[in-house]
Length: 135
Image (cartoon, rainbow, N blue to C red; front, side, top):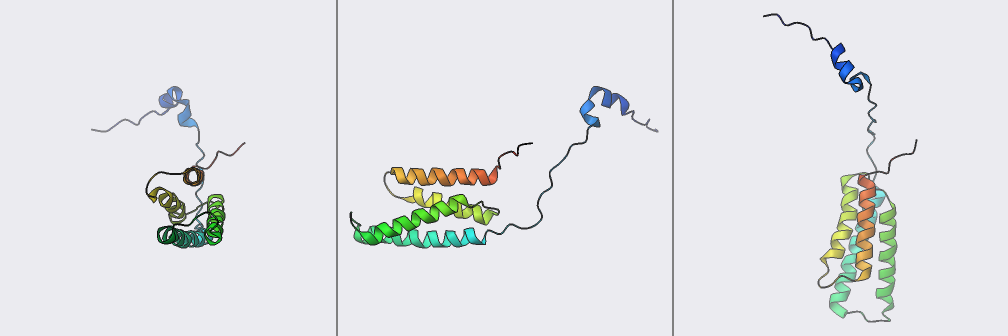
């Protein structure tokens, strides 16, 4: 049985949006380069391993300058990681690994740990959900 051609004019009368063209943003085809972020992640992981071992082996006390310098260096690395947008899943893993490190600490979380994980989590959110551009 032959089918009659569908009259689209009635559809466009009832649904005027059907006549509008929707602009879809283009997706960048150039791969992102997270090499600097990955390098910072490796540096942070190595420093975290040293700090963790130092804490377990010697229980640093106030006045331990080597430990304090390492903590300052770690804070600087975290700041750079937070500020650097991740363009790949691997880059996002660098940030997620820093959060995981802070949460892996046994016992109670101190304020510094909370601040670092919140900053890193918000940085990941900014990378995953870019702020809308103003017209």
